[in-house]
Length: 244
Image (cartoon, rainbow, N blue to C red):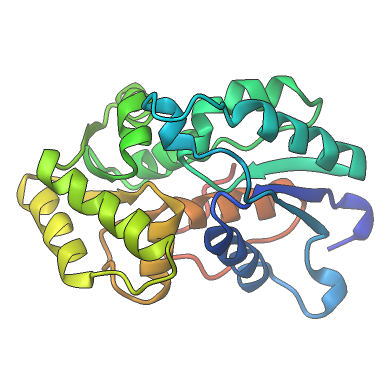
């Protein structure tokens, strides 16, 4: 890979920190490289103090994360980033605000995931995401544009999922895998062909081997697109490449 053809990847991270660290691992693991110099040039803004995305969307927190994310996007652009990635599904509620703040492309994880699901021929998807993401309807609308039905857990299932995300993974505790498997089984039994890991914390469950073949990991989708957009060659994903 020629240095002249590469773009610096800017990562709006810290949303949360464990997920951002995993995204960096994915970029390195899945870039075709024979030396250090073949890997992507990358800079991460891990502003963990960014206000909680779900809390704001649900009206529980008056401070919007949008301006903070836009500010970090500008800093990454000033550093020299030619492509930006946001390592949080819920944060894509503020995607337009962030994209408008810079003159470089901002990858859209939700749109990329819907495209990937359509590419696999999926017609009904389960959505495992924060209540903030589910409530925005972003995945539901984007999937519908691709002819895909998108189904979230019922109220009790959604509460159980939020406990896994916030009380366990974000808190640095082991996730209750049995509880998670009960959620995925419920979606698959309802006719979903696959399910979206629509919160980047849930990607850590896939990393640990707890999700099965029906999972579409949004973090992997974003990593593949980021590698391609920055001039690299993605390798080792569970699906054939289909571009950005």
